[in-house]
Length: 560
Image (cartoon, rainbow, N blue to C red; front, side, top):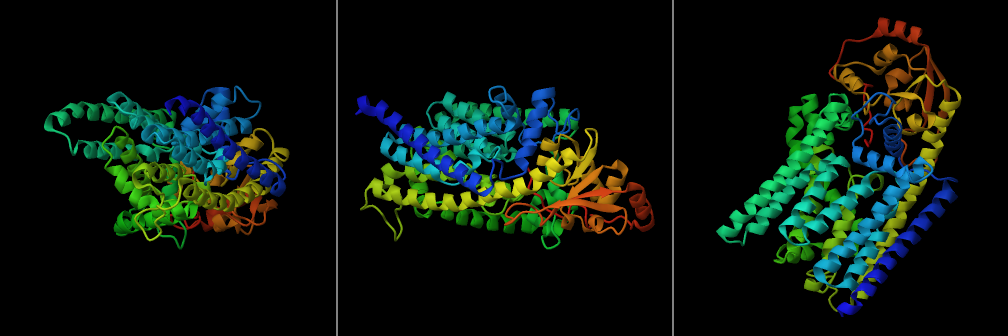
C-alpha cells in the first residue's frame, strides 16, 4: 500500500489543481462576459496595490508617495505583492499570482493535513477537491485581497502544529503569529493556542505538565515578540500603534445603526457606555448565529456533520490531536473574537474577505473525522453511514459547487460595478487633472492607484487627522476647506451637508452602475468646489461643535 502512496498523492493533487483551474476558468469567462474586461470585485484591492507600488518604487509603506502611512491593515500582503512584481509585467498580475497560489495552496494543505493525520488519501482527496471549489477559494484567488494569503498561512500553521513534536508545534505557532501582518484579528490565535495547551495537558502526569511549561513560555514569547514588532512597525511609520483604519471604523455609523453594532472599540471611542453590554453579549451571539447560517449555505451536508466530527476529533490522543483541536478552536474562536472588535455581518459578506479561512477549516474537520465516524453526516436524523465515501462526498461537492456559483455571480457583477464606477472615475480624473492636484475621495483605491494623484481620504483610512476632526464635531466641508483639493469625489448620500451646499459646488460628472451590488451609493459624483465661496459659507453657517458630525463619517465603509 505504501509503495503506491506517492502516485496516489500526486494524482490527488492533480485532481485538486484541475478542479481549481476549471472553477477559475468559469469565473473569468463570466467576468469577461459581464464586465468586458478584467478587474477586482472590491475597490479595496487597489488600495493594496497602491501601497505595494510605493513600497516597490520608493521603499516606503505609503499610499501617497513620500508620506508613510499605517493605513494598510495588511502590510504583509502589500510586501508580498511588491516582491511578486519582480517576476510579472504588471501590478494586477502580481496580485493574482500571489492570491492564486495561496488559494490553491490552501486546498492542497487541507488534503495534506488529512492525508498525514488519518493516512486516508481518498478522504483527503475529496476534502481538497471540495475546498478547491467551495466559496470563497476561487473568488479570493482573484479578489486582489489578503484573504487567500492569511487562509494559507492559517492552514499551514495548523498543519505544522499537528505534525508532531515540540519543534513542529512551535513552528506552527510561529506561522500562525505571522498572520497578524495580514489580519491583525489573528492576535486571537495566542489565547487559542493556550487553550489547546490546557486541553493537551488535561490527561498528563504532573511531571509531563512541568515539561510542557517551557513550550508554553516559548509560545507566548513568540507571539509577544510578533505583536511587539507589529505595533512598533506601525508606530515607526506615522506614530500610530495600530492601523489608522481602526480609528476610522470607530467613527463610522449609520443613523439607524447604533454604535455598538461596530463593536467594543466604537463604543469606547464614542463613550457610549450604555451600549457596552450589547456589544459584549448580544452582538457576539448574533454574529455566531450568522456564521452558522453562512456555514450552512456554503455546504449544508457538511454542516450537519460538524458537531459529531468535532466531538470525536477533540478527544484524539495522537500528535495530530493538537492540530485537530486548534482547527476547532480557530473555527469558533476567531469569529467570536472578531465580533467584539469589528463585526462584518454574514459569512459571505464581500466574498468572505474577513473569514476566508473558516471554509477550509470547516471542510478539514468534517472530512478529517471520517475514519472515526465513517460518515460525513453522523449522529443526526440524516445519518449517512450506509452510503459510500464517494456518494457522500459527491453530495457535499455538488452543494459546494452550487453555492460557489451563486456567490461567484455576485463577485462577477461586483467586478463590473467597480469597473463602471471607481475605475471610470479614476480614468476621468487622470485626464482632467494635473499631476500635482489633490483629490479628496471616500473610495480611495482605484482613484489613487489609477489616477496617480495625491488623495485626501474623507473616511480616514489614511487620513487620521480627519477622524479626530469628526470626533470633535467637525464637518467635512470645514476640513476640506483647509486642504482645498481640486476635486471632491464622494457618494452624495454619505455627506449630505456637503453635497447639498447651495453655492460653491459644481458637479462635473457622475458614474453609476446596474445592478449595483457593491458600490456604496447610487452615483459616485466628481464635484469641483469653489473654495473661497465655500469658506465664506462655512464662516456664516458653521454650527456649534457636536460630539460627532452628522455628515462626518456617516457611512460604515468596509475597511481593507
